[in-house]
Image (cartoon, rainbow, N blue to C red; front, side):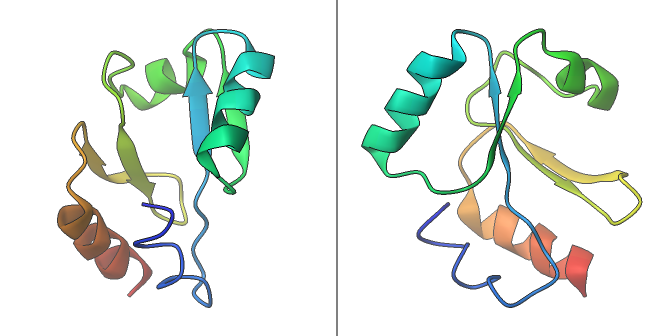
Length: 93
């Protein structure tokens, strides 16, 4: 996603944020650094965001697109970048 979609939307009114669910944030940050991930990372160690959004916390990755009002407009539990790209484009207009 980072290499495929982020450059495309860099000048758009859209923000990519990674949300880490689960184990130790220090370990997660080390793994993200090693993988070259540069998006902002939020930590949801208790899966609170996933509960509030009613999103699955058992799948990886989970892509969620929210509109400007915070409403979920797209969710997927697979790595289908074409579908994600279509949802982002439709959301930002």
